[in-house]
Image (cartoon, rainbow, N blue to C red; front, side, top):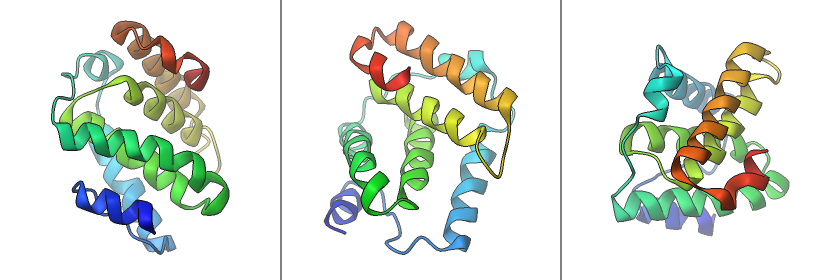
Length: 141
């Protein structure tokens, strides 16, 4: 919960209790933002420049590692939020990883969207190359 408190201070309020309704709402919000966005549009997003947003996405990136084991239902919520931050506030090196994780989620149950997942994988690798984010190579691949 301390992680979520810090994120809230950075302007990213994430529920502590991930219910089915919370999960569904987060899925809907990210899918609405992604709806109709082409690979080219995603790769053409501006750079993230706001300090608080950069700090938030970096913190989410680190929290994701802990959440995966400690609170698994929080992991996809963090991924959805990183994708949303990237679309709404611009991309940074962590955006590559966020889109790659989103692609992984797309190909999983219940979505089974292999085409969408493949597309997000391409976005992740192309964005990583575009940004020169070589430090993200192990996490994207």
